[in-house]
Length: 352
Image (cartoon, rainbow, N blue to C red; front, top):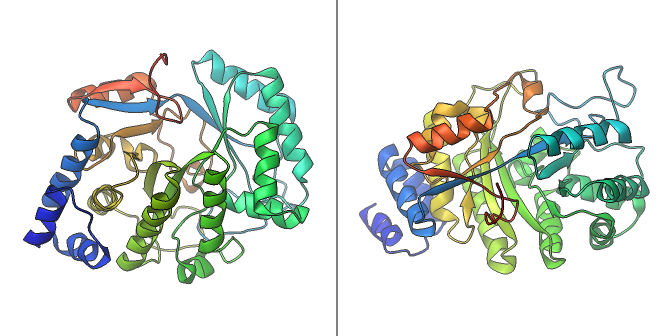
């Protein structure tokens, strides 16, 4: 164990067997200290970043029917919806009025929406508003590829030409097909998720990567996911951040114990240690609450994510945490840092 710790302190890369030993055997404070050392090395400026934006979930109609999702509805459900342009525009106008600079645009895998629908939605937003569109996810792109008969590359090219600026890392769950076949059998495979991200990076789209953990996966499978991100990042350098967040079991088809704060912090820390090529690690205050999110700043996180003017997917699982911008600033200050606004590319200059 000491040899692994010394490698990390020296700035050397650790491999899977070393990561597993560290994850399962190291005490929590040691893990946190090692991750914090790497965070401070990468971000010595004593600032913690965040972004002011809004999640716009344009539809909850989805054919994927993932067992972990409390948000989706069937096409014929009375609770299903598809936002019209006016509703989307009203949400954007409110976001801009509140100082937001970005929308995160995501929805379900709607069986009746063509690629042209998405192009018109993006083009309409860009025609009317100067706002960054961080949109869709690999499963949505694969779904559009299937419906349109076009390649993933061609779908992404058309979305980019219509106004897509960057892509979130949703739909990753755990990038191991044993897990995916049990919790999201109708969603794209791990290989396809990675293919979409690789193609997006090749086309100049920057993206984030996520990991939803704490359901049926093993520790080894969590690490397989993290190493898959590291390996792709070695090739493309296209990920701006990694966001691990714990599964929320409320109102879902999966029965399991909710992930506690210690497990979350250990997973966050080992992510920071392994992902030596991903510049930013984001805290998940939405699932963990403000106190654990504050502690996460000593466990490798250097970013507080979004103020989330609106959030629907996690809320559908019975988790409704709201954190105003001034509270994010206070939490960060109390942890010994200065809170600084950023954009999706982690630029901070001129953003206030």
